[in-house]
Length: 305
Image (cartoon, rainbow, N blue to C red; front, top):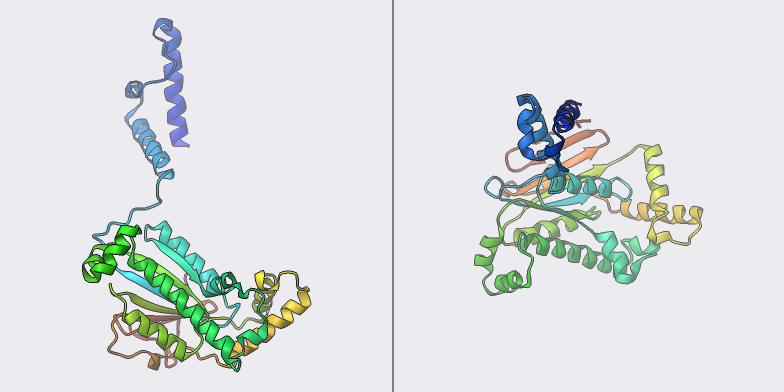
């Protein structure tokens, strides 16, 4: 309102002066005429111009001299527990504050590989062939994420070739600024998480691995999530009731092998690993770095609104 008021007052003065001196009339008001505005009006108008210019650029700038870290966020949880919702929120926020972030979804990769419409039997741990396929798809998704992290900020073929020839030197050149990749998969077993941990430990430049486990036990919320899942590409053309029953069977297959994250899962000497567990509106955080673990009956920290 102050900006508009200052603008209207300036236009009124300019119009009045032009009416009194018609020979000096100009089609476009020049910035020289801003000197007729009061000091507060000039400051407000300058701020409005800065906001208008920033609207067409990035929301924020990430100075590479402030944060230089590559982060892998690996989601953990049963299907329909909000992992993808959390992942998209994280990516959207990090991009907003200037940290490049991207989502890598194992389910999307499976569907792109021609396995869309897989029934509940495909997710049964007793189905060894299907389990091997799912494991391969998940690790391929992680490889794609790590490759994306490695070649930022430069993503050209020249940079890729340079990295293959001299990995250490090219890695030092690429390791500038913060960047985050979100590995959106179930990762429900200790064995899977161990494979993710070992693969990230071999990465160069080094990456920080963060496990985020999402837990939901609200029956009403779960039912809504199940109904949403029953309408995705895996059940295209299927009857709603049949799709819902098949998805419930898929969830039961995952529940049969589900292992939640524990403090004992990560080695204490590891310095680049953290886990966060989200339980409804509560958060339990633990890390082997600089955050003290919470648990053993200690109340969890409430999530911010």
